[in-house]
Length: 97
Image (cartoon, rainbow, N blue to C red):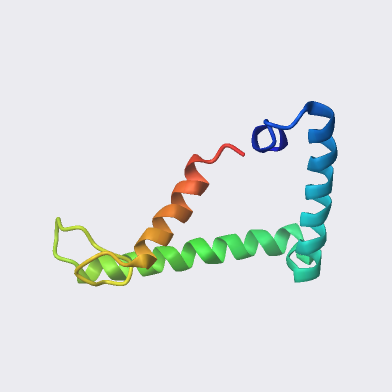
């Protein structure tokens, strides 16, 4: 990621800036408590998130007419929740980082 994001910076400085960004990011995650979870806890959170999204989609699909598009909140039109969910799922499926 460093070489892609900081590609406009000369190589030696890119390494230094990348290290500073990494250190600041890890410190922030620790302060927030995010990096204090174990790998098993994180795996459980991911599983729970995907199961909850799946339940929402199943419920929305049941309320929609057959062969019609359906939206996460079950309305007649898409909402910000649909755009957010689409972006979230797409970033997970497409991102190579």
